[in-house]
Image (cartoon, rainbow, N blue to C red; front, top):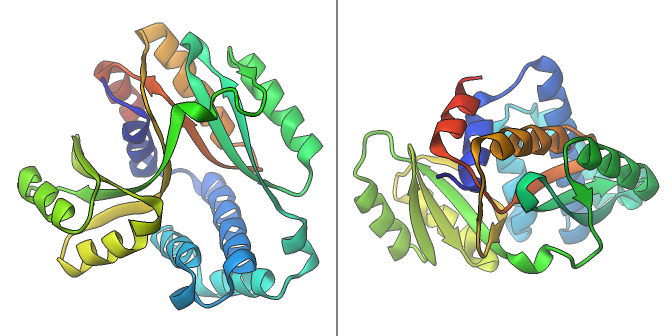
Length: 251
């Protein structure tokens, strides 16, 4: 079986077409703008902004676009001020819990789009607090094994301050306290390890095993939610059969 973080890694590897990349740039720009608005425009003094910029660079976002997003947030422009960070909660096929993190300038539009997408995908939009208690906020760093000994990588991660380490396919997943994410990330990079990603992550306390039919429905719904313009990140406590994830990866 494979959890939500494994699904996230597969999504990252699959990439997307030009239209999807354009949508990803928009979402990355919003995150940079809000990070600069909340913590200032200097990446050296703003860990959230530093991570957002690194993620944008990994996605090949042009530096001019990154700079404009920072200036928009640090300057307190009208567009930046209108963006709200709202987390919505709901349920998907098989009764899995779903968290949807959004950045929106129109809450009513976002609620309408989420409710429609969830309902059509076999889920429901829940009340605030209905599922959030089932998740813990963590830092998540994915290390590419690239033929290296996964156990050695795990030991390096633990020495760097990791709370927990798991091997998922071609990656070693490193979990940290949220405040320690940037420090652990920098230590791992300085150790010469190749990092696939570093981000804040909502880790489910327990997972819900799904059969193949419910897994296919849930994966489709999670994809559809992620494609909504206002959605930044989607999390679930689904536990997918490995065969379904392999089929999803090759699709």
